[in-house]
Length: 148
Image (cartoon, rainbow, N blue to C red):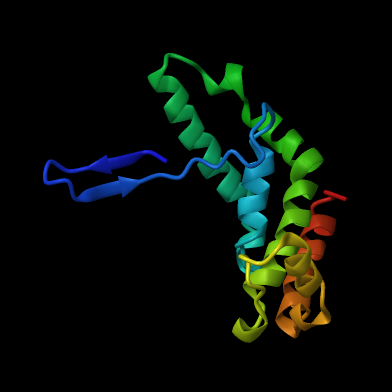
């Protein structure tokens, strides 16, 4: 974990590098997971705006290295890959939303053995009205955009 400290040894910045699913592949896996696990229904309707923000940022970063995003990763490829791979983000988000919306007293103790956590997590206690609405909104978004 990279840590940046000031001269007084006070921590200025901490960055976590997550190698959980580290492999060569499309950024859509991470982007769709991030987007679908946090976006409200209103934000889901602004997907193209957020993809544009991502692509502009990528373009600026690539430009600093003398590269063109239109050669390395054009917006058209990002959108094609989103349509093909965003389902990964959807399925990941469905699981994460279940945990995020769980009542505090029902949240599993993640320090327990994996099988105990999974047993508790699979209970119906995690399926709330709010959770069902979020999942419904995600499914509706996928259908409206022909992602399924």
